[in-house]
Length: 485
Image (cartoon, rainbow, N blue to C red; front, side, top):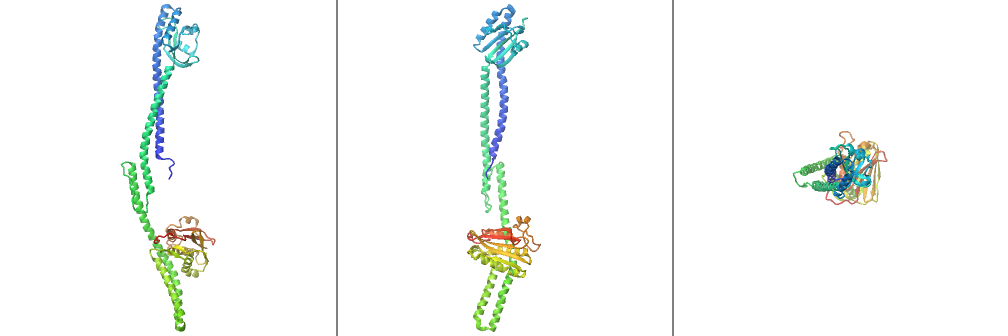
């Protein structure tokens, strides 16, 4: 059996998928936490920087007043140079958003009304923003209000380079992704090993189940373990014992059924044999009478007596042969003659019940090498069934043909046939449409068993006569095999 999907694949896929989802959630949780921590660290540094800048600015505003713009401008220039490019801009805003000092001197006295300037002027606490500037690129801005110790109002804005923040976020992200991927690979490797160990035991058990031969009485040993696979192997061992015992019982019962049907067939044959013996007995009486009145023709009369006795011997031998446990040995015989012999056995019923017989025998059929008595018994069963189905008036047709390396005899009748709902069960034991006491329901079953053992088959079709048509097909050369049960 080809597996569409194995437990191993399902186990790895489902655990891998579940683990990937968990790690993905964990990744976002860790990244969110780390991002906040990193941004918080940079915010703290930026806040410290602006608080460092605000103190001298407030002192200058308090001591010199708002007109000391040169001092403030010089202070911003030195402050920006001190951080060696880490600060992209520095702005001191006065009331109404007027630029008091700017790292870019050309912006002094400009009025700023952008969102970041308004936020800086309106808030009482430091404000932190990260954004992309159209000309300066990535900016990490910190702003804080002025006027806490002076009567003037305004704010300081510092634009820091956001590249260090981005680099730290990127490196942290890559590190976390690497750790999660490494964890995923390690866990999948462990799952693969565990899954392979589990499924290899199941595969071994499955292969053992395929390899078991119930024709023998030998139990297939499976490894004993202390897990579920060991439990499965133990249950399978018990199943083997039950199946082997059941097969042995079934074979014994089957043999008994076959022998029972043989004995029943012998009863039907006995009527034909009695009729067959009666004819040569009458001939013997006639010969004895002629010997008395015509002693001169002794040789002819003795030959006739011998022929009659030989005929009786053949009939009795056939009856004894059919009653044996073995149905016969494999040997060469005339297939058409066996068909005629079976017809002779039921000849008394044919004449008694006014049944017309149509016989078409193919003269080109060679001698057949298989079980003669087994074939005749199966054919007799089918012929008797046909006669029972026809009743007192009707037609039975027998035809022999060659089919490649096989020969076949086709038996058709003008009876009612077999109803379609019963055809699927007609070869089962004890299935019969006859009245209680008039049939065992074993005839077709036993016939199929006998013909099957001979390498042949029995098939059913609707007869052109209107009733049933059974075909017995046998190989011309049967494989040698001592005796057939």
